Image (cartoon, rainbow, N blue to C red; front, side, top):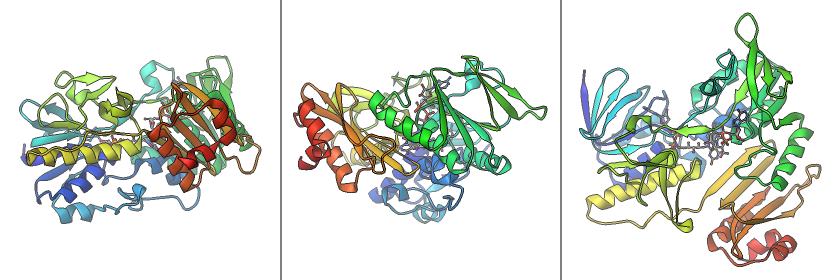
Amino acid sequence: MAEKSFKYVIVGGGVSAGYAAREFAKQGVNPGELAIISKEAVAPYERPALSKAYLFPEGAARLPGFHVCVGSGGERQLPEWYAEKGISLILSTEIVKADLASKTLVSAAGESFKYQTLVIATGSTVLKLSDFGVQGADSKNIFYLREIDDADQLVEALKAKKNGKAVIVGGGYIGLELSAVLRLNNIEVNMVYPEPWCMPRLFTEGIAAFYEGYYQNKGVNIIKGTVAVGFDTHPNGEVKEVKLKDGRVLEADIVVVGVGARPLTTLFKGQVEEEKGGIKTDAFFKTSVPDVYAVGDVATFPLKMYNEIRRVEHVDHSRKSAEQAVKAIFASEQGKSVDEYDYLPYFYSRAFDLSWQFYGDNVGETVLFGDADPNSATHKFGQYWIKDGKIVGAFLESGSPEENKAIAKVAKVQPPATLDQLAQEGISFASKI
Ligand code: FDA
Ligand code: NAD
């Protein structure tokens, strides 16, 4: 089989790969030097669109509308952009073997790719209910959402099951965003999750109470404290009912599962140091193997602000880590260095007419402020997290661009404050900093 050779190879063609390509171009990569090898059939795109505008009943987002880097206000990189820069976009190509010692990757079709420097950007894959042995989990019309093909299958099912019934399994990001967009499609929605409130990895009970109330007002029926333990099907193999651990049975034409993700490190197991489920890197996203970098969801990196090493599964970090790695690659080739990655965690979500942002760390004591009544028309509210007398995290629903900037700043600067003061001043405290 053919062997191709590149100075730089990015394995994975998602968000990090697209932003890395932009940085390679900025740094002056020569035509023919860089290849992106992706399992997906399309050029890198802004993955967050898949659980939001891609599923709208009207005016849905479609490619080429949301190729990177439009999500951060940058240029839209169409396939022609890569061609003009002499970047090889090798699509529909899954790498099935990586030998870091001989610097060789092998595709499912048996093609070999040699590199001098490798950037691992394989992202995450979904956890599946079949992995946990849930009975009937392979039935038709049970969907997961990670890649554009998954979203296309869901779009087809929404067309086929107009005004039907859905069960959403999971109360995290996918659960909350999909419940909302399926309601917009006039689907009857039951949402099921094991925890006492939604999105427990970020939300406190107070924040969650707002969203749960708001969702219920929009017709989402929330069932907490239980899990799906089995699925019954129609004779044609399509899902018919979801059986819950608490004995309840829910009718369903469509099931969407969002029970978490797992970083795709399998190709590199035993060849590179791992930590916290990801590939361990330094502040330049260099792994334990020379000339191998890891960025985005797969990287476990030093989070300088908190003096900890962490993995982050969000789009802002995937963009910024990719840029940092490419800057570091070029600097090291010139015997120079770049500043260490100093990341302020930033997460966000949008659903219905809601939009929240969070910056910093969700540890310590909390104080809720503003109007968190799910029945109110304005519903602008937020929360601060305080540790050792200083603000370390800030959350804001329905903030203006200036207010969102203010909470980012407050989480970065970490000013001292008391819970009483923050309860009284609310967002105006952040706006003064
Ligand atoms: P990403 O998953 O983007 O890309 C990985 C790529 O590698 C894929 O193209 C994959 O096919 C490819 N690949 C994997 N293994 C391969 C192999 N062996 N050979 C070849 N190719 C391979 N975050 C946020 O902050 N706000 C948001 O609103 C959202 N919304 C959102 C919606 C949905 C539906 C998902 C799934 C995720 C989000 N996220 C998000 C998370 C965010 O999208 C995620 O953190 C980034 O996409 C991670 O970027 P990466 O490049 O690391 O992986
Ligand atoms: P998640 O980790 O956000 O949430 C998973 C949820 O499912 C948790 O509440 C968990 O306790 C629950 N759960 C676990 N097992 C369950 C079971 N058996 N039955 C019912 N519920 C169960 O993961 P996700 O929502 O699947 O998201 C997948 C990935 O996509 C993550 O990396 C996430 O960051 C990313 N994503 C991010 C955004 C965003 O940032 N706005 C949006 C969509 C997806």
